[in-house]
Image (spheres, rainbow, N blue to C red):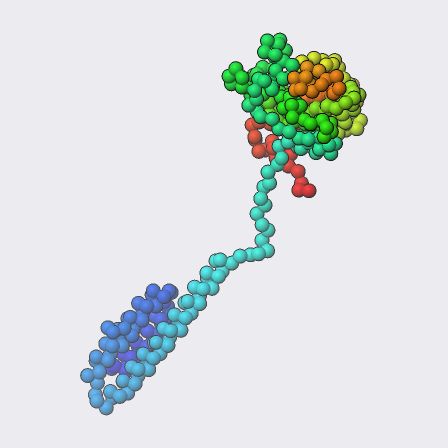
Length: 349
Ligand code: PHE
């Protein structure tokens, strides 16, 4: 076949191949095949010897033309492929800034802490200090200072976990009273404190009992503190938590560290005192224990009980949370099921 004809064919075939190269790797193969050292054009150049001398110039020109054309087309295609790759990448990595964001699910404050924080804020507003005693308490503070010597029968009221003879998991926050009484300097003003915290008892867990729960201790000591101060304070707590319409009543009770001792009931918020299953048909719900600080407790802390007196109260925060939020199983507070806890999520203020 005539070389010119061969060149014509090669040009057509070559351009087709260049255009068909789908990626830079294939394009490079095509380049080697067409214009490489051992490529088709080189082959044709080698065949020039057979061309009549007067036509060599013409053939040589055409070879150069075809090579230039190939190189140009190769460069163009290489450029196009690179552009296409960039476009593809841009498309794949495109960020749609108008898409809605992923919602982070916020945690919820634990219902017992909703009550605790609420009451703490209430008492801080009334000038009380907030104290926190140790959960591993000594027999000395938890009981002896609180007018409960070692052989006192009332120790049975609280099923205590003892660690050894002197240390225990506190079964009440009342030890906080003794710790604060010992330190208080009455020349600086009256003592007013609340002490929230965990307590432990050897109870079998069921819907209404837990071996661990939260209490809040309260103590006010000054000159001339009367039982009506206690009553007013307790009423304020009840109305703050359960609404202004709640009625309260005090029933006589017994605690070794208060005399007289009382328990407070609130009128049932479910039936408004008529009697229902929540208040066990009594119309009343017991919410806390309280009383006037026993003189022995003051004397044990080195305070002259003929000058100073006060009142104390201890309330179960879990119980308040159960009543306020209508929770029917105290164990829900301690199993940390997020579906339970999420019900108490509050809107960000
Ligand atoms: N410590 C008592 C209890 O755990 C409650 C209480 C505290 C009663 C303070 C009176 C005064 O049952």
